[in-house]
Image: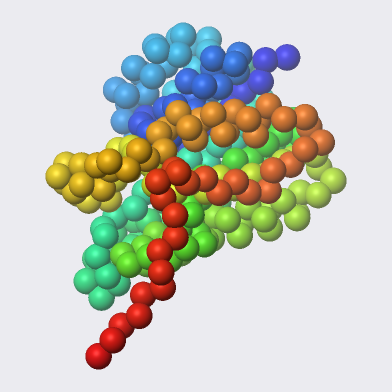
Length: 250
């Protein structure tokens, strides 16, 4: 039987690449995002509505999320994998200089949106003995200046993944937290308010992870035998490692 994955935040970056990788391996996909034009273009690229079904809504809106899931066409009602990819970071400054609205947007998207989608799809995943993949970050483990709320949201995603795995024992549902390091995608342009120069400086000479690298990891997790659960995968480019602890001197 052909499997179906629901991928949130599929209009760019990781989500777009994950959709393409899974479809290349014979999956059908439900792709969500806020930009209708990009969703339509992605559906066309993936092979049309028999292969990919678009859902255009803001994951922060619970009513819209419920309505979208309630209106799935017959060929997409069974969900074998939920890929919770939608997320964002806003701002790179210290906590004392941050905009509270930016903090709330990260919490509403990275935490509230993710847990809402998970709960609304969970019964279907139990029925299919499926898979949950949550996109966290190395920021869940490793703090850095300017990470503040973003890192906190990703620490939640990691811990929620582990707790979900505990609760789902005996159901056959697998749960994985994928935690990338330095990755090149539109994510950074969103974080910097569209600052292309900052984007270019961050990645110059760094050979960062690419969306296709994360898509390959998701595909690997999804293709393992049903008795194998990958609890977490932390991924960095070879160029990235750990720095010395910061010591402030008077």
